[in-house]
Each structure stands twice: as C-alpha cells, then as structure tokens.
Length: 248
Image (tube, rainbow, N blue to C red; front, side, top):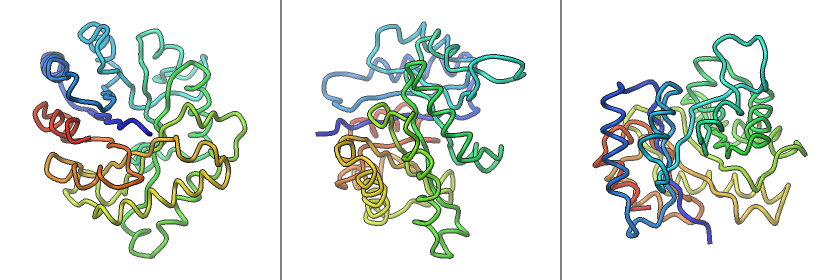
C-alpha cells in the first residue's frame, strides 16, 4: 500500500521570521495521528533555516528546483550536491511555473531528475496541461509528451521518484479539477508507467496539485490513484496545511 505524501511548495514567499514561525508551527502539530509523509519545499535561502529548525523531525525539507549540472560556471544555479549538504530530501522538477515562466523543457528536466537521484535526492516530477490545451482536448497528449522522455531513460530510477499532476489552469486560480477528473488523469499516468515498468506502477506515488485546500483535500485524496498533494498557497497557512495532512 502506498503511503500518502503531502508536500508544501512555498514558492517565492516568506521572510526569515515568517518561515521560522511557520516551520515551528507545522512541526509541532505533526504527531502519530498523521500517517502521511510530509515535506516542505522552501526557497533556497531558507533551506538551512529549515534544517536547523526541524532537526530530526518527520517533516522533511525540499528545494523547488535544481541544476542539471554538477558544478561549473553556471551563475545563479544550485546543484544537487549542494542541496544534499543541507539535508534536503525532496526537490521539485518541472513545476509548471518553471516550465511556463522560465521555459524549462522536458529534455533538461529529465537531466535534472537524474542529477537529483545521483545525489540521493528524491525528485518530484511535475506534469500538467494549460487551460488552452485542456479546452482543446489535448490534456492526455501533453502529459504523455511530458512523461515519455522520463519513462524511457534508463538512467532514471522509477523507484526513487514521485510524480505530480498539476493542471496549470488550476494553480493559484481557486479552480480545482473535480476528484473524478483528477482521478482519471492519475489513472492515465499510472497506466503509462505500467506500460514501461509494470512492477513499479502500483508503487510509485502520484500527487495532485492545483488549488488543494482543507475543504477539498479529503474528496481528492480518497481517489484510488491520488496518493497525496503538492500544496501551494495553502502550505503557507499552518492551520490549513496541517488539516490537509490530517486528511491524507
């Protein structure tokens, strides 16, 4: 049985004081009644803060992206090895905002997954369609295209990978795919994995991301192929995030 997973993505939000208070509040609320695995992907500058605040907590720290390169003249980039030095466990790869705003392409994203795994990080590889693609009926074609390079690359370890489906039209808009609609996509993704690695398909966790909140989390997480959530705005509200973790 797949253990539920909830990961908060703070994006470019917070201050030193706000981040410290949020980490302390969330950490203090995690107890044995929450069976889900929990992580927070914080801005690079707060990763060391998270390490110091959380210590050996069940709450695991993650980064929001990384470089596909190990080292070198890549001004502004952060490598996988640098992240592991600060006890990062998770790293997001291919979040829709990285794809849309920073033009990250599938081929480079696969290299980021490989770099993360070689350093001992668990990448959370994100896929999802835009509103235009959704309305054009191209949702499954787009997602298939985003996944094929990943699933066919022999250097990618599918046992050390989490996937996240995040419809771009539902991120930060308040719009959410219906539980049934989201389940259909998650089942499609799991079938794609099954076609490449049948033994892994039932074990890999697939998260839903797209305006998940305390009110809709339970109806999403009860779906057969939804294994938790990648939480944006609600992860900046300790009470809401904890409620989501409890529902998972």
